[in-house]
Amino acid sequence: MGVSHISNRSEKQSERWSRRGVLTVLGVVPAAVLTGCSGSAGAAESSSSGGSSATATVKAAKAPTVTVSPADGTKKADFTAPVTVTVADGTLAAVKVTGNDGSTLAGTFNDAKTKWTSTKNPYSGTKYTVSAQAQDAAAKTLTFTTKSPGETFVGYFTPEANSTSGVGMPVSINFTHAVTDRSNVQKAITVTAEPAVEIVGHWFSDTRLDFRPETYWAAGTKITLSLRLKDVEGQDGIYGVQSKDVTFDIGREQISTVDLSSKEMTVKRDGKTLATYPVSGGNAQHTTWSGIMVISERFKQTRMESSTVGLGDEYDISDVPHAQRLTTSGTFVHGNYWASTSVFGSENTSHGCVGLHDAKGANDTSVPGYKFYDSSMLGDVVIVKNSGEKTVAADNGLNGWNLSWAEWKAGSAV
Image 1 (spheres, one colour):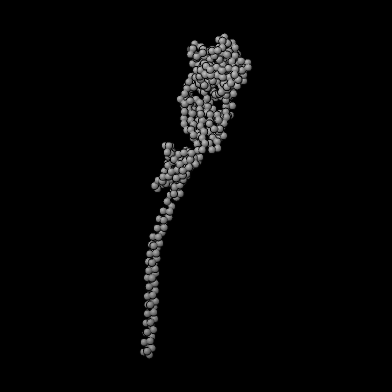
Image 2 (cartoon, one colour):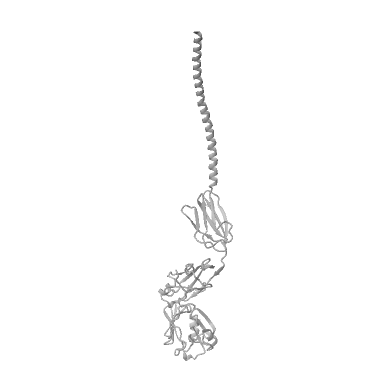
């Protein structure tokens, strides 16, 4: 019985201990879990620390990257396209492009400020320094040099810079190479006037472009010719080289009318008659051009040979006095000392020129030839009528005034 009893207690105690053991074990589990949590927290810390490092690496990898076109160090960069500056992983704060000639290239940003584009192309044969700064980053400096053009052209202009001309003087430009892209070239040339007036260009050929207003310039007008031909492509592979402004003035108004029916020239200055001279024009076989002509050259004395105008050996006069050119083809208004005084005002005896009585040597101030020459200047208008000849071609000299305004404007390429 006792044994049985002892045995019973042992069982109960064993049972109790077993439960305690379980509880103890169970009690350890939270500790283990806590230890596990602690371990996990450490791992989380480690992970968090590793994440910061990775983020820093990502941030470093995504620092703003600036790219310039043409690329840094390019020696023969294209000059027919604008300069561009772009940034990846950032925005642009400032861009400056400076040439070694002192010029700068202006430009604009896109809306996102990730790209800057120059408003004009760089010049040829120029070294450029680009300073580009991304937001919150140091400025980056790069350089490139544009190539020089192969072939070039220039435009020779009339009248000369800083000169004073008569009211009929157009702005006439003759190019050294034929221009096939007339619009491109004409857009690079502007002519402005004070007082302001509409001025339009007219192409007479692929090498000649003239500018004029609808009617003669007003006396006292100041005219500015702006040439922006540098790197403008006139034809495939041939570029302009000029970038300059020139000015010239219009003087008083003098318009002379030659009536070859009455054989008389009437000179008007600012609308009032200044003088009237007897003249002799072209004979029936060599009629004088009619129409509006502009004095384009002046010589106190010059040689005139018939062979230069297709008339064989009919004349060769070495000292023609007071000669003023009206056409490229050889029409002049000039003094004449070899014809009888009675010819002037009564007969047309010349080979196409308009002659006034003059004296050999060109120094006699009392004769009509001297007086008219002395009163004239380049750009003065001489109108010939009743000559028996058709109107002179508009491109035969500086004589575009013979075209109507509609005809003139039709010759513009812009």
